[in-house]
Length: 416
Image: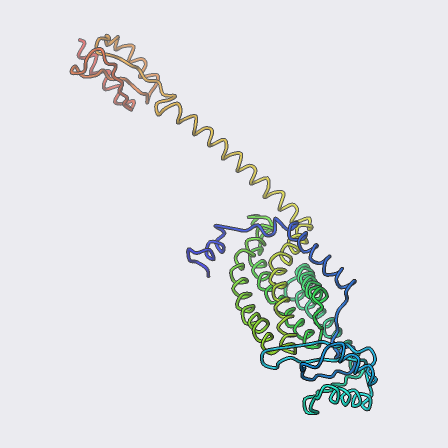
């Protein structure tokens, strides 16, 4: 897997690496700012729940040149639709429409409002769309949505605890809450309508985010197997390696998923106007972006933090740090020794006699005694007669003890 020479292969082999885990404080700070803005928007602005959640009656009809927002509001209020909200929507395929939302009206009052609108603005009855949603049904939708979200989170924690361990479950749960708050904060900031379709999309992107996190955690488990025994690296280093090994895969998966969602959101919703398609694509786009971010920058760093709090991994980190420091000192000392030897030259530390042809050969008996004492030693042999007397000649020859004794005997015979 990823054995090529590209960036994916180099990341997988650890030749290049992005220190995601080591910079967790930076990622926590960025997420903290985003979450703070999201919570503030949620508390100040709140969510714009759709009619399916709040209940009420809506009237949708095509717009004409004689209609205006104030005129529509006056007609609806006069017909009994108190507290009406009038919105204008348009799309290339459907055209310009008015959407009027009121509180829950009885069937008779709703028909009266529709009749007044048709008469006042010359609207055909077939072009008038009336939707009535009871408050009870909207309350049921809200409670079911929260129940589905809670059940989903509980099941996820149980599964991760059983398949991996509780620390991984806590880290994944933290990333999921991170994604939920950011997605909800975007809806609060922008004022987009929250519909049942949005809740379905939210559950979908939570599953997507969890899938990406589980892939990374599985690689972390593989890299950290037997780590306490081998002591090859710290837990944080092994987790960071796993994150880099799956980085390209995560990015490719995210881009592959975001491209069709973006096309639905910006092209499809732009042509078809507001509706189910826009609600679903919007929450998917925001949630996938947040899920990709959290699986890389939140889940694994949180897991590493939890693991490093364990006394066993604290001791492991200390041992690895000492080993790295010792290796660094040894490398520095070796480099200094090598530099000194290079500066002294290749013959440094070796005794060498320098003679010229004008030097007397000296007493061979003294040479005999020296060779007997030194054994394997460096000896100097006079240069040939062809060499000028003024040039010092240095020769070195490794001579064994037996060869030295033979040379001594031959020298004595020659002297006699």
